[in-house]
Image (cartoon, rainbow, N blue to C red; front, side, top):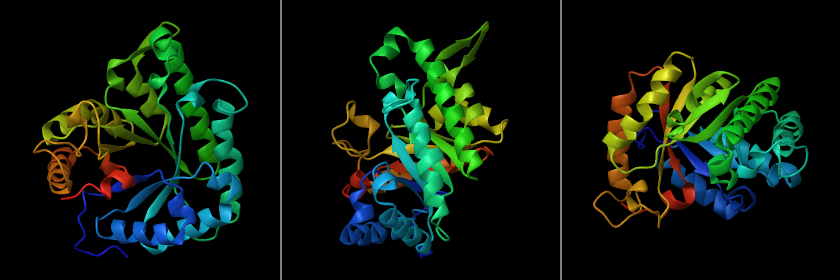
Length: 283
């Protein structure tokens, strides 16, 4: 179980992109030792391969996470999944990860079941975004709407990773233009902001628009920060060569952000991107 004196930021979460943690007992033990001392209560477990080819290992990991007092979400991600189509790597494939493989997984589990599916689909990383932004944005709304339906049919919720600036993207459907963040928030259950900066004021201020809208929609918003090294600009990560670097600084920022955002009913905590970076960040 998580020790009572562990560091926490309301209900803190962590992205886990390394599937070796699922399949390697030594890596798993190291992971649970680390999260147990950092107040991690929710883990986004990337499992695109394991859920299709090694469900027994995935089930063991999910059960172990539950025994350590953690809630899990099944994490998947690829920007190409925004594109309509039936086969890999299009929307149909992304939906099948939920409707086919997650359904199969849940049928095999009794304890430690995940509570959500979690998709990191970043359509703006595609070259077509610059040329066809409105069309791609509509495709994304269509994707997350389909994913939400598939998740809800299994008794799960849908979380999605989003940049902090979707509120600046107007999306036109027919004769109506709406900020992209509002369309996404309306379609999903959990809105996880990739709010990647290294000061509390900037992190908090950038999340305000999303939180305010989500407050009126009964949705959950999580604020995410970054620990990956070598980022440009450097102040988007807590792994940099400035005084705004390291675990202690990140923890101080997240404590302040939590206090600032606590009045928002939609705010459910902080999350850290990701285990690989955080585990080597240093104080």
